Image 1 (cartoon, rainbow, N blue to C red):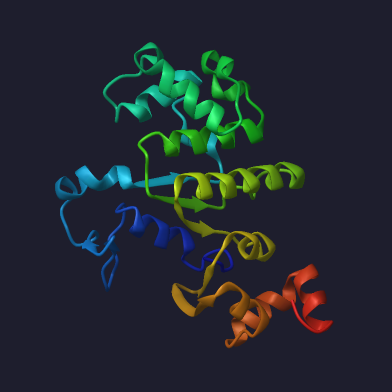
Image 2 (image 1 turned 120 degrees about the vertical axis):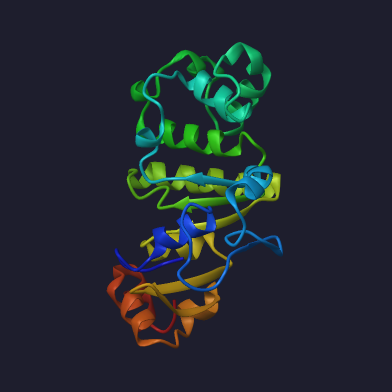
Length: 225
């Protein structure tokens, strides 16, 4: 999902997560009602969805260690004691390329890339089928961005995950997505297969976005993206 700031991307993500009701229409999760049912009826299926945000540190409880954060996620809030889920915590950390020794650390002492890897590990803890990735690499250095994107690619293949990937960076969207939704002012203006949208955009707004992206715009003027 791509669009400028204020286009409605994050609001859409909140509706998909069941945190906000749509003004019209409904959200379904695996062909079953989602947005139209009560929270108590969604609870048993919440583990099917996970979320990764732009600023992971703000979503972490500052009182908790890395291990406690993951214990909380693994146990669905039943315990924050890492010793109760030590094997699973080690597995999650290794899955995202972090040393198990980091379980004793506070997330505030980690680098930006390490924090985002921890956020991915926490999102994976309940074994979700879908991850909502809301600008997950936009705050990272370019080299770290590439590493995190490669990790997400690897995890998708290994675990059979689906991603709703939200970004304003067209190169990231093109790398990560099979299909693209273009949003403007709270409305979908174009959607379709990624290469189709990037090489033959139908809407003026999509063409303007592509032209405004330096590398993409240059490639387009040279005969194709």
